[in-house]
Amino acid sequence: MKGAYYTLEAAISAFLIIVIFSFLFLTNPENPELSRANVKNDIYKGLDTLTARGSLRADALNNNATAIQNDLDDFIPSYVYVNVTIFNKTFQNLTSTFDEKTSDTIVVSYLVSGSAGNYTPREVRTYVWGFD
Amino acid sequence: MLLTSLKGFTNLQQVSSERDIVEVNTEDAAFDNLRKEIEQVIKFSVLDENVIADNVIDFINFTRNATQRQGYEFEGIFVGAKANSTNQTMNITVLNFLGENSINFTIRLNTSTVQINSSILKDYNFTHSNFTFTAGDNYNLTINLPGKEYEKNITIDTRGNADVYVGFYDIALISSRATHKRTFQQTVRIPR
Image 1 (cartoon, rainbow over the protein chains, first blue to last red):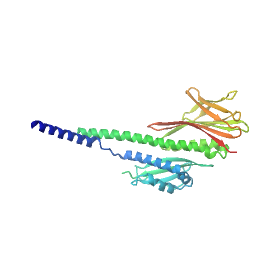
Image 2 (tube, each protein chain N blue to C red):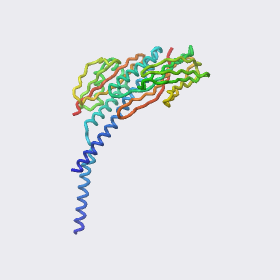
Image 3 (cartoon, chains in turn green, yellow):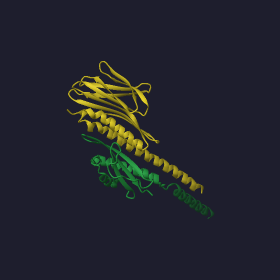
Image 4 (cartoon, chains in turn purple, green):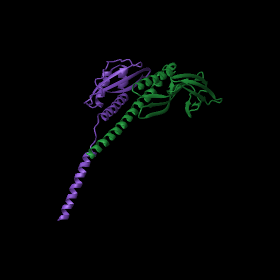
């Protein structure tokens, strides 16, 4: 009978140890910096997709930042804010000026060289904020 | 208490290394964008063959400035060769953007009598050389930086009745985390 109690005690102890270690070490840490880095990656994937579709090149050359911004919404988490601006090769802003809202704003720069028969460099700059 | 501290430390390391991996992936994506767009410049400029080299040099300068604004360095060498089959002259452009004050370089074209040009190029300077060739033959253009163990071969397949532009790029995007390097070349037919 005593042996059975010891076995039960050992089993409960082992279970508690497993539960505590699981809680301490198996939970995924969340970090805003990691989140920012992931969103940056999402933006590049989005911009690559829009380039493959042909829309990014056309919109960048037409200075249509709003269209790019709308298209990017499909690739970015809904809890963040996005602003797209377009610059020419001397880095003059061709669209609306953007004031960085918070210090946690991330910036993604994407270059476009032009289109067939039309060498016209553009920088599509995407600002994202609101990670808190 | 000890376990909680250990957990905190482990999490911090895990987040930091995960963030670094994601950041390096992001840099890869940025570099991929630069590489693909640089490769487009010759194709987009080919309707006016006189501006091809100027446009590539201009776009590399634009890329360099854009990446510097983000805290990166963008370095490399560009060699462009325009092979004109009518006058059988190859106009070769070399651009140095290695970020060093100046480099010595030598280019060699393996025609029956090897044609050579050596020169010194300051950072972000370029030079043009004219070599002759036989239209329709294939050549190796070698660029060498004496004293730097740098030598690259560029294959130039000329056409008998068409002009071509060959672009060779050895580029690197450098951040505090990683160096992303790529060497590639392209051949674009110039329409008449």
